Image (cartoon, rainbow, N blue to C red; front, top):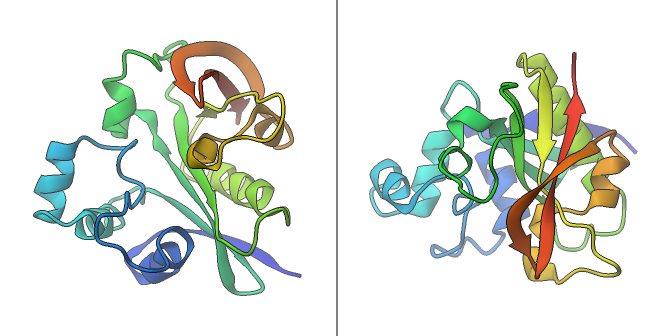
Length: 191
């Protein structure tokens, strides 16, 4: 089994879409709702969420990475400099812990039919590597710590356990919740 992780550039957009929106529903989130404001989505995509995400893939720092197992796209991680993720910059619930120029993981998605096969760990590690290669001093995530299984509608935030397995440590709590659970601030130092 071989794993590869690549930034979502325009030439990899269809692979990204196969993971997060295989039916290509126009009203799907397209992993924008927790990244940028509705006004920005409208401006970028001229009314199309898909087009807005396509435009983000053309940026200096594409909005995340796709993980491939044996050449098949199986996972997605929405990551970028916190300073470029408008929803975090303006968040009153997930405030910066300090002045480190962290990159933030907004969500992690595993393609249907590939869950419980180690994909989330691979995509998180690939996202961290992408951030490191791009000069990030640290990567943060904002998961929950569920006592058991988590409601799948909010699973995109990830769990403490899955980020801890990739070397992240809890450094605080947010005022945000997912599935009625407080979201933590977990960080992996890259220096």
